Image 1 (cartoon, rainbow, N blue to C red):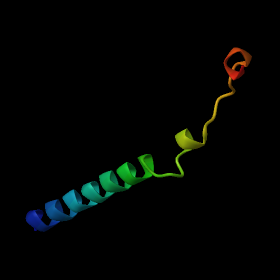
Image 2: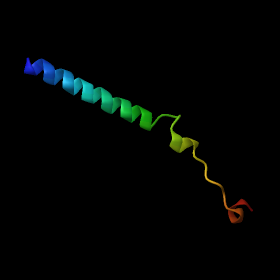
Image 3: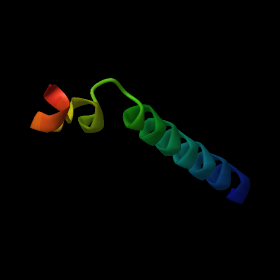
Length: 44
């Protein structure tokens, strides 16, 4: 009983960690969309 429960819990944690890793490096991440304004000194 405990072996089955522990196995399912580890699978759930592994799936959650995988999901977090995928959303962190996806192309739709907010960090990719952030574009700060360029100072005027650098635009010249």
